[in-house]
Length: 342
Image 1 (cartoon, rainbow, N blue to C red):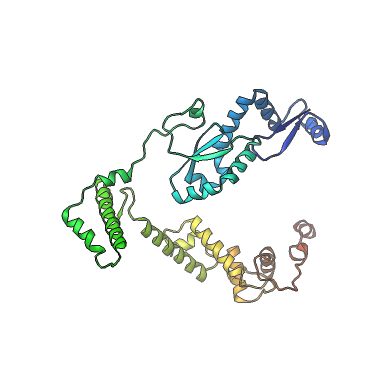
Image 2: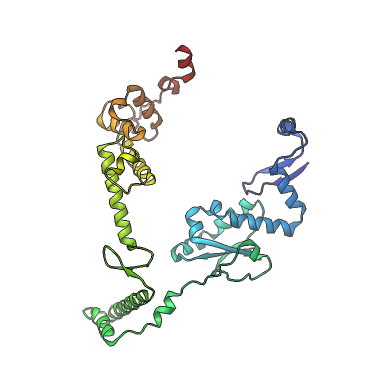
């Protein structure tokens, strides 16, 4: 019998062999066969320590999102593991500082996922265009396209005398010399960036006129504002028609999507549930909550549906101190017994 670790990094230990009740039951169902969770780790371990570390390096990098979450995985891209150091590329400076402070936690998470001491630290670097050591190229294919250096390209933009005077006049009313100089520098940089963006075919936003990338019709601020307006319109429809589904909502908000509708419905259910008492089955708020959660029109709103829904939402509703949750089957009868009776 052999003790091996699962490559998913869950920390679980598997014992290969046919000892124990689990092994016997497995042998009965599949005589002569072993599960994949036993075969692969034993095979990797048998190839030797160098191959095992290389395998787990592949495993960690390609399952990076499972380790740090989807948001961090989009912002911080693993480049490879070299000399027990995990190299990350992170374009978000704020998140990079946070990840640096969380370095010990990330190291523990990576090692736990790999179920072995794979790394001892992390480092932040640029995107690797060529492998820096053997095997790195196999772990992560290097990006061939270089990033556009906005800072370096901005510095080569020369402002006219009129633009320089305009930048100097911007902070002229400030008494503090440092504030006046910083205002001039910031405004000059903004003028340089605007000219650089025009050179790269940036176009004015359709709403506010601010420059935005050529593939986008509106700037980020206007897109966020329009998205919030659309969400507010969807919430208003749900206030008037709590049971409305996506097709009905689109009659009033044509660009509504199922994802947007579900997000706004969930937020409204959560807010309304905090205002409804768990024993309330007759108020307008309670009825609206059930119609919103179940997508039921008023004519289909029965006492049974009210009881079922409020029981399922009991942990989100307001509960008095003396409240005692009822038994499940006193609220939701067993379906099989009902069918037998019928």
